[in-house]
Length: 384
Ligand SMILES: Cc1ncc(COP(=O)(O)O)c(C=O)c1O
Image (tube, rainbow, N blue to C red):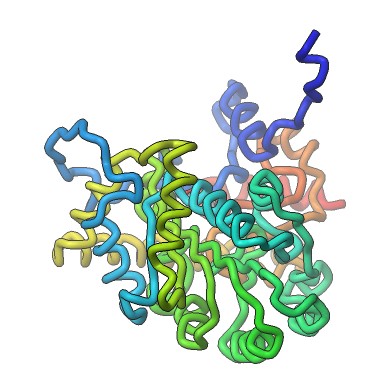
């Protein structure tokens, strides 16, 4: 049998857990796994600034590289600090596709290896290996202090010159720990000395710090340093377009190589998906180009952000009431996720219908004032 040549590949841990959650008939089940922002009724959050937009039906193909109007609006709003001649963007099917396209482009550029922080988003290794790169890691998170590993920046000094290094733009998945401004300074010093290039994954812009500018600080600083990098941007969480699949891959500091880069990206897109879907980019274009909608959308982002900060503080407060102080850093971490590897996730699922992936990553947005006590009670009983 020819299928004998196939070996079984473990299911994606996050999506496998989501299916298990959906099959669970317990009405009080809680999903702390999948990275989706929910409202108080635990439904996928719907932006009021976006949900009522009506778009004229258009069934035509988009150009291979995506909708030029959407891309212009994207660059004008998120990358306003960059000169247009020095960057180039293609529209992608969510952030995952932007990651894969970047991987394939790097591979065509002759790059053999990429360094990711350890831990990193569970899909990074698979994507970049599938694109033909070797994946290596640098210790990023200190599991003891629950802060940035003190040796992280030093460890970059020890990798090969001209290496490719990946970082999340903000709200690092899964730790919630980002570089601060002075750590970014140090990073860029090392990067310039070692002639590094970067891959920056931006899936949470708008959901982490007080302003979108702050969420893009790392991106802007790398651009200003003149270092070549790729930016994979996702609209899944910040516009709640999970199932619509919208993202962008931008190459920055490209100088005169735009045509060459574009032609390679277009080739990869053409042979894989031919061209991307248009509904989500039509929606995003309207939001980004309409002053009122743009303002409304940013107000909604602010509410979500403040809510995440508030729930982080409340979680820590309640854990302290149970004499659990070892998770206090959760209040200082940022964005959607924190990592609690000290949990018995199997028991939490079996005995409390609380779903957390094995690595202990929790989605703060799934914690609500009406389930907080139940969660804290269960966590306190299931510490390893
Ligand atoms: C770090 C990171 N990159 C990329 C993505 C991909 O997002 P999308 O759903 O837009 O493909 C995610 C989503 O979970 C993520 O956490």
